[in-house]
Image (cartoon, rainbow, N blue to C red; front, side, top):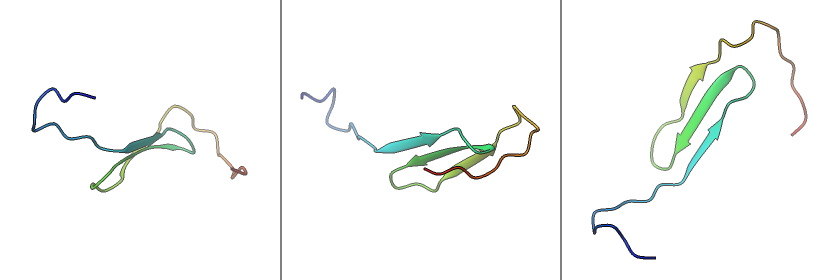
Length: 48
């Protein structure tokens, strides 16, 4: 795989938009959490 330039960095990241808030995790940074206001219904835990 050829790099676009020598200063290019690749980060592993994960995104989860469930259980009442959006969560973003990028390698080397703190988790970002944003409340989800799409629904006002109470949510309960589910397996998995």
